[in-house]
Length: 167
Image (tube, rainbow, N blue to C red; front, side, top):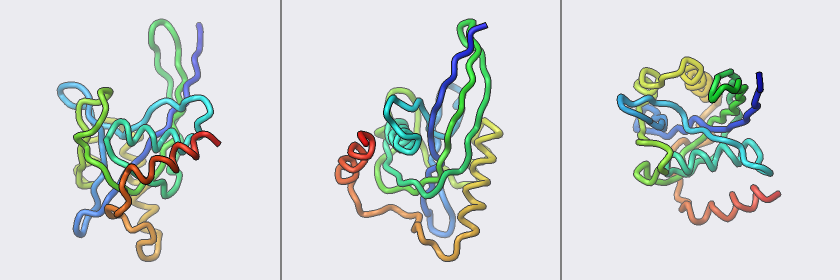
């Protein structure tokens, strides 16, 4: 049997919501299947750049990486081919953007309070990523990443993102 190896990257994007945190999820299908934004790593892209690009495309929002959370690997079958997929996930802080600007690959992008996000997420591994992200933030003293909307506009961040992708 033929085996195809795939590599993807994505992120858990968080923002402050008064005394709590919100997580950014993508939804597909009806009824909605909620998951974290992720997608294929393109040639000459780092995992980090791919994760930021996929978040931007699938959610309409800009984010910055705080730290790597984990790599999830799994197998699946498609068109008589066995696939092994590795997905690199990063903890990210929201910068700006609007979920209405998500691309055609998803039916909806939305913010959920982290407790509701954990219930909404379909996959157990992604629920665990949410726990890992919250554990990481709980270990920090203060709030060095200021999980809140930044003043930087997406257009200002885009040239830096493109420059990093070509290195």
